[in-house]
Amino acid sequence: MATKTKSKSIGSMQMSKQLYQQQASKYQPKRNVLLNSIRAFWVGGAICLLGQILQNMYIHFFGFTEKAASNPTVATLIFLSVLLTGLGVYDNIGQYAGAGSAVPVTGFANSIAAAAIEHRSEGFVLGVGGNMFKLAGSVIVFGVVAAFIAGIVKTLFNMIF
Amino acid sequence: MDSKKQMSRVNRQTWHFSQDVRLQASAVAVGPKEGEGPLAALFDKIHEDMYAGQQTWEDAERQLMEDAVTTVLRKAGITDQDVDAILAGDLLNQNITTNFAAEKLAIPLLGMYGACSTSMLTLSNAAALVNAGYANKVIAACSSHNATAERQYRYPTEYGGQKPPTAQWTVTGAGAGLVGIGGSGPRITYATIGKVVDMGIKDPFDMGSAMAPAAVSTLQAHFRDTGRSPQTYDLIVTGDLASVGYPIVKELMRQDGYNMEPMYNDCGLMVFRPDQDVFAGASGCASSAVVTYSHIMDQLQKGLLQKALVCATGALLSPVSYQQGNSIPCIAHAVALEGGA
Image 1 (cartoon, chains in turn purple, green):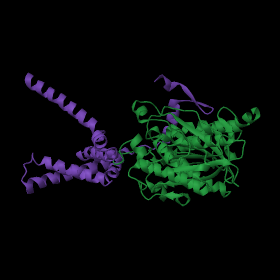
Image 2 (image 1 turned 90 degrees about the vertical axis):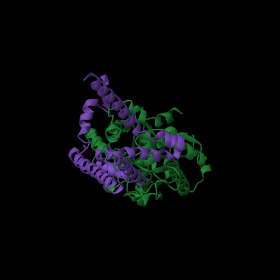
Image 3 (image 1 turned 135 degrees about the horizontal axis):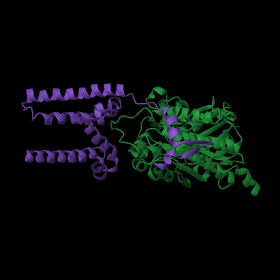
Image 4 (image 1 turned 180 degrees about the vertical axis):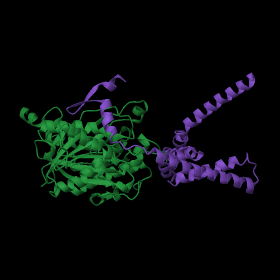
């Protein structure tokens, strides 16, 4: 990063990159963290509330056990997210809610569906198949690796104590 | 021959067109969102959907470029046979919009890439070819499409990621200008070719901050080389700096003793209304092209403007370069247009 301190010329002016970035930052509108947090909180909370309602519904009306009910609950949320992605609504929700709609399982489904739709024009195999995990892939890879490490730690812990 | 050369080369970066080189006609084709913007009445063709009647967005962008070029031919009352060359570019890998559109148009092609500065890169070179006598009539064209650019540079269009307020909205559209000797239309008098400037901005969602120094560099070179000042012009526009880069240029120019009030504006602030949810403003090759080839051309022809300077700005990044942690190199090219008839 030695170049950072080097003075550069913009027109007739000599200015370091650092000084320019400092000057430019005055004109860059910042993300409103508080407002974003509030929006993420209520939208994310609403998605989780919907999940809870779905789970209760599967338990009370369809006779699932509490543990077994989580599968159809997640499937329903994924279905709704993919539907909203296909209808072109989910990206608008995402712009409003930020992490609130990105973190729940609906966000994961959206990232897969969005990539699949986007690359449909390149065919099913190389387009849809090859690209649908473009965004979700890293979540899966690091999720599996993290789970693996956590599993080993737990096993070792149980063996020792 | 030497004297003519002298007359054409003003300085290292600036060319003077000694012949009566004119922007004889121009045309613009846009998508639906641009068609709801403040300049809609001046656009030649407004498509009602992003697909422009095609199967894919890439095909739609080609359609826009073909529309712009065929419309400019129609407006000038000539056929493709009368045009010696088309200089064109776009934002997609390998300039595919340009290459595919040019195959249909059957005009000899010089494909050019300058990211969003392509509008003035092609116009300046078109003027140079005509001025030097290598061609009688040349078309300069460029295009961008919101969805193809999103796919190329960012995420799938339906992905629900949140964009920061410094982000910009790529214009869906294409512009084409016909350059020739004589006739009506504004004269193309000077072109100033930019140097690549990189002030270390790395955020691909903040192109305005990245490109502003390149615009300042080219504008100052233009004024220095031509002996002109900002006050020479009734209108100076930059291509797509939007609400972040625009005030930065103003401030940097002020610090160097150039007063850019009140003639300075930015095409990125002219294509859309502020309430059209475009974050900081418009971007893309088409940002400067659709403004120059509609609004500015119109004003010059009506005599509402005497002298205009268009400084198109381009961010020369690729998805690979920014993922590898490189900052964003930028460039700007300026072309001076002067009173019609």
